Amino acid sequence: MKTQDKQKRFLLPEDEIPTAWYNIAADMPNKPLPLINPQTKEPLKAEDLYPLFSHAAADQELNQTDRFIPIPEPVRELYKNYRSTPLVRAYGLEKALGTPAHIYFKNESVSPVGSHKLNSALAQAYYCKEEGVTNVTTETGAGQWGAALSYATKAFGLELAVYMVKISYEQKPYRRSIMQTFGAQVIASPSMSTKAGRKILTEHPNYQGSLGTAISEAVELAMQTPNCKYALGSVLNHVSLHQTVIGLEAEKQMAMAGEYPDVIIACFGGGSNFSGISYPFMRHVFSGEKKTRFIAAEPASCPKLTRGVFQYDYGDEAGYTPMMPMFTLGHNFAPANIHAGGLRYHGAGTIISQLLKDGYLKGEDIPQIESFNAGELFAQAEGIIPAPESCHAIAATIREALKAKKEGKEEVILFNLSGHGLIDMTAYDQFHAGNLIDYSLPDEEIKRTTDSLEKII
Image (cartoon, rainbow, N blue to C red; front, side, top):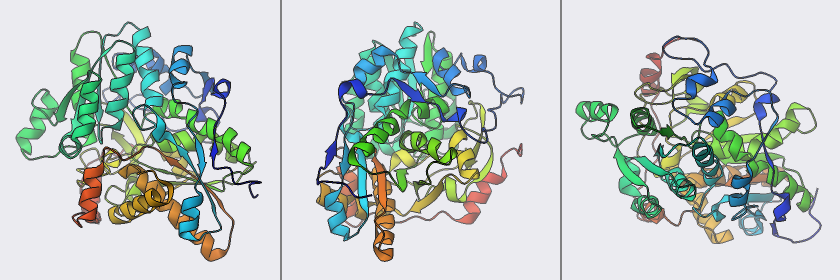
């Protein structure tokens, strides 16, 4: 269906900001397999997670019955600082591509920290504060999650320690500066401050780090620090739950535009922004009302959705976390040093993995050079420089738009612009200088890191 005018941006009034998050687990035709306690090998209970996470986050993690979970009023009040985020018709990109497709993007880059990550950071910080917690630990890849949680913990009067993947710590110094400006302590991971970090550095002195390593260090510090909890920025169900505010808004905004998406696209690392834009729309596919397709765009150098195995695996490198049923490259997988640091994670969340198994979404691998070409074209057409992570979603969108052009179809495409790239210009400098390469993961490397997994499934 065509839009009736040339309106470009769609915003919701303040009183239309969602009052509850959508819990897709309640509607899934096939529920995800349970998390497993690595010590007992029994299904995990919420109480098993209480020492590590806030009680509210732990309860939400295992909730498979409540379709909607209320957003606490203090969190909604802070959401109002930047929500609703705009839904934008990308007329410039459509013209540049010469496509009949109608392209829309949800612009999460307008948040105070420049990405979607704040949606869950505010919720997790609030729950910790309500529980009387004083200290929080976390990890961050590209630094977007660390920046978001730094702001959120400061808003609720909490102290934060962030383990930042070493390669990103070096590549993205301004994200580190943002975290420090908000009052967080930032440590390059692997570090000598934890047992997990010391072990890795002893075995691999020049190791540039991974999200799995940083998670191990943050979890270890949380477990050893009084009155401290750990917060995670992606992968887990409660994080995806908090991000559904994106898709719930987008549903209303697409109705304002007079259209409905045929395909929804987001970049994919652990799944937070993909689930945020997708889950609210996916419930209409479960019911048979709609036939929307969903594409998760991941880096070709970290292809857990397209080339990983479905097996129980740890969320971190040291094996401190519960075991999760996931599409994984193995928790000891060492990703290539690509500039999309937020996507260099070895596994997919349990819900995403089950949905992929059941055919409700597909993964698409994007080479690094193609992603930056797409990001640069988008910047020139729409005036927004996207984060390297978001460039993957744009590349997948361009593929779909050109396919629609070839087939002469007025397909409606919606993608999530998860963050801006104004603090990632070093990556663009490297791209312009011709210093970036496409890295394709050898089959033998995937086999090496997945063969060692415990075969529970």
